[in-house]
Image (cartoon, rainbow, N blue to C red; front, side):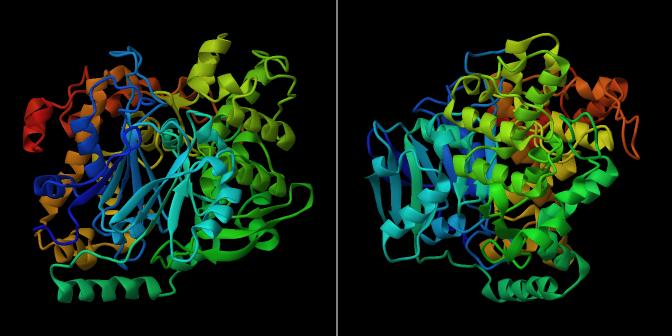
Length: 601
């Protein structure tokens, strides 16, 4: 392998045939798409036929590391799970199973261990006829029976599975009952709380009857310029060791710090996005959790920020808290449902993780049904007798359980708000908060609408708060996700310790600022071309109607709303910045050629 920093090798497992092989990654793909999200998108584009059913054996489920993963580079342990989404669909279907690609990012220790085992990525195809797990011990790879684990929640599974693996440091990821039951919003979990949460990754894993992956290894790719790498590593580590306010804020509250600040700023999803400020936010915020719940701060591999929080909730909702609330989980199962019972919130988060379900989507879906009840568009009979109402923990817990097991109304609700709105009718699509079928995350739109509307409307996996509201920010996110770097730490990687300098030291390939940024644009654009090939057009790049019609009635930002003409103008400017056709959203041919994507024309 000529490119340092990579093994140049993919592990490919076909669960239908049992075939296991190691394949070479073309040097050109490494140069052009880096790894992680970018390399996953290129593989998906190359190998998957347009219109492939996401639940079919042909769909590819990829666990992709990046060139930073496995090295002790602070906050760079991410694994990107890439597949075709079971969640999304265009307004006008080109194929029966038209959907976007999906990418979901998770921290922890799984990605580094997969790299240590000698692989830059794991590709799973096919479908087993019984529950299985994949066991990876360096070059030794096997498909093992997982029947005894099928049906277990992720918490129980993690404890039992690792105890039965025996001695040796294994890292794993797995699905819970939601994935096993093919709930479209199921996710993949590792270490009981870290998640590849969005885009239905757990549903695709469940469709393959794959309960888990366990891996251990002991290798690491060679670094091209060890002297320069060590100098950069010492500098960036030193910047994290400085006890400045930013570092200490992450350690003190993690993303939960944003619960209060976002509410104060009017950017929080409250009451199914009807409001941007939650009057009881302090009951579930950082200080309340520091005082009543959290006992330990912990970190992902080689990360000094330690933004993860664990502890114990007490009383009727007593649970061991593996992590949370984060901003997203605290908002979607707290403020968005008007729930301020701190222990009840932790029980909801615990159950969501234990079921292996996307907490963003399930919180959004429950909020949608609460509003439908409030408006009289449904009644308790529709919900199997559940008296669903704002602020109620018990009814929310029961509805989440039904969604996980596809029981009664759960058979409908597990498909998300776009599907539910079609079933309910009565204009309920106006308050179904999704883009392309993928539910919005916890950041509301009307305040800072020029940023958030473009962020959600143009995300390649459907609504995604991590997308960014401009072409530059989106390309930067693609680069981080492809390197394996965490977005929370990106502000430390600037000037002399910019990502591109570290990448050059590892790989031996010189990266100018222009070429580095171009790689980010190339990655975003090949994702766009995958979706365009599936039938997604400008009409799909929009935001929910509610934001054009609903004014906030509470808080400092009372009256906030999105102006439709302003949104359309912002979308025009965004398309122009990328060189996309204003009518169809297709990248122009000259743009594709400049990005070395002429094969997509």
